[in-house]
Amino acid sequence: MKPVIVALDIDNEEQLHKILSKLGKPENVFIKVGMELFYHAGNQVVKDLAEQGYKIFLDLKLHDIPNTVYNGAKQLAKLGITFTTVHALGGSQMIKSAKDGLIAGTPAGKCVPKLLAVTELTSISDEVLAHEQNCALSMKEQVLSLAKMAKHSGADGVICSPLEVKELHEKVGDDFLYVTPGIRPAGNAKDDQSRVATPAQAKEWGSSAIVVGRPITLASDPEAAYEAIKKEFN
Ligand code: C5P
Image 1 (cartoon, rainbow, N blue to C red):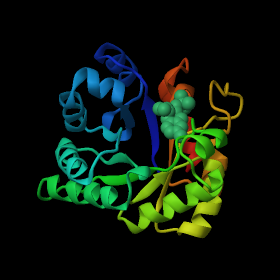
Image 2 (cartoon, rainbow, N blue to C red):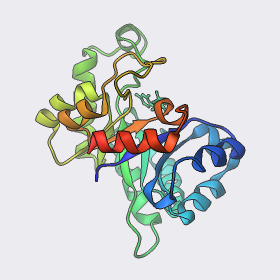
Image 3 (cartoon, rainbow, N blue to C red):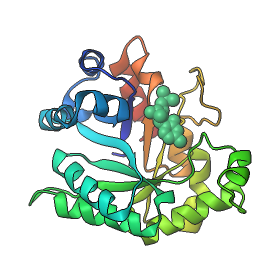
Image 4 (cartoon, rainbow, N blue to C red):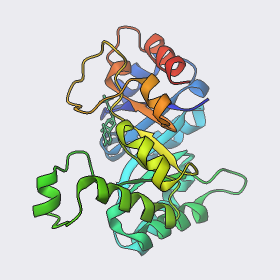
């Protein structure tokens, strides 16, 4: 079954336990923990959740010199997480170091966390790409180039829009993970997302996993919404 990852965009344990209590058995739940909760509650909260059986995507988007990222990733690999992220813009050596750090830090007998690269943030406009990052490529060319570089550097996949997945499968390969936020089941508000797809479209276009926040966390029955999205995506 391909993962549906619930984005927990929260910054305190009270909200965390409230939402988790509405999502069903830990072993059936895959969550994304971001900077806000990690920086507030520290790594103990991640260890505790992993011990309870939750699968965890720890989204900290590492970006530093290779040696620092190696050492940071080595620590993250001890927490029992399944996915984590780096910025592809940190370069090929940094991505390789992140992967090496994850391998070095994973306890014996445990799975090495999958390393996902963020290409260009979806908040970066064509204007910023051209005039602040001084990039001569179009956004599409830049995302493709970074995805290929990330793959050759040892990343296991990229975070991308579901609308980009089909082309990335063709040009970067099927042996790479395409993890896609920007998911809205039919009838849900788009909120602040602009380019959205339904779980069924994400499935059709080849997303390896989807990240869904508000359509689940703000639903009147989060567990039912989660189960319906899992069904539609699989
Ligand atoms: O609530 P919603 O489904 O829009 O949440 C999507 C999640 O995916 C959020 O945690 C958001 O930060 C994250 N994300 C995104 N677009 C990206 C990368 C991450 O929406 N390009």
